[in-house]
Image 1 (cartoon, rainbow, N blue to C red):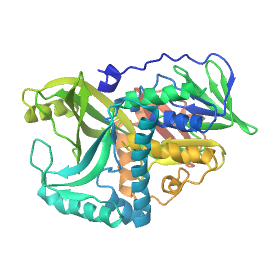
Image 2 (image 1 turned 90 degrees about the horizontal axis):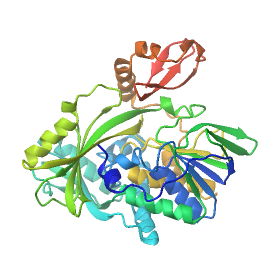
Image 3 (image 1 turned 45 degrees about the vertical axis):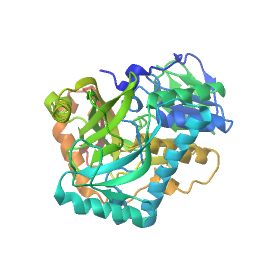
Image 4 (image 1 turned 135 degrees about the vertical axis):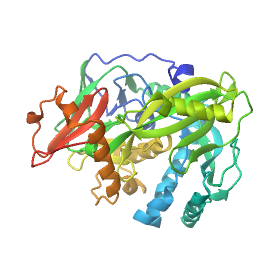
Length: 450
């Protein structure tokens, strides 16, 4: 079943596939919210942009999000302060706060009707043993200069033990918003090509050749805005992230709904927000994330969400079901900036860790500032070429263990990949049962996957 956004708000325009060789200033690979936000800003700056996507506009992660626009990414700031210090955590927070205002400014400037609403966001718990953790997060966020609140009352249809509240966050309809970005890009002589698969990017002198089945795009700059970076080297992003799947249902509760956006402080994750459908508010209930590739039954995914919805609203009706996949970085911070230190004018934004509505705007501003020769004070936080000691060793171990258990090497052997052809100290991405899997072979010919 399609998401609410894609069912109700299909793109107004049908874009053509690329069938010729063209030249442009900036080639953007991927027509999701990050790529199209880059296209918007660069078009506004006077550059000619060309956006290509192997599918249609916003048909992947952007079209399957819960579409919360927030700087509150779980109980995250205690982790950031403990790991990187107060200034780093503050810059991460205010980069995302500025992104919320940037999105609102785009909506107002271009008069985009996309159901944008200011809402408070809450990270909550029903477990009294977690209240101290909630209060610690509030103190941490206040200490770095943002007014978070500890509350025990919300609009949820059940009692909570405590929550962190961020005011003046937002929610919207992402496809309506994307349609507005597309309109602006086209109006400013940009081009958008769909059903156009890019299979390689080559550096030729001072320019790039982006190779598609239908034609070649010559450009000075390339932005890799695909959900999962499909170009393996020298970036090796396949070895620095994993994918996480989660689920959403759209529910007619038959009752008046709450204000606010909510997510649990710990697993199992449940996410709540409201949205408009056929002129009335419905509930979007999501969560139950797991590493992509792990076998999950209906009862563990949609079935669990539906049962929970019926516990809260016995007479409810399930209107929509959809799932999404997100790229999760090992240190929980997106990769934004140069694709590699060895490739000038080639940029990437990935690993948005389930918060892509906000961090996509952060990413677009950082990358566009780099292209336009401007300083961005937040770029260092998201440095895409960072090579830091991995502090989250447990996460790395779990990622490799679970990946090997769920997608064993014997399954790889059943694929069409000739493993003897993979050079030592090298790797790549293969598809197994429609799952993208990163494979790496070390210098001793041992294989690793993620």
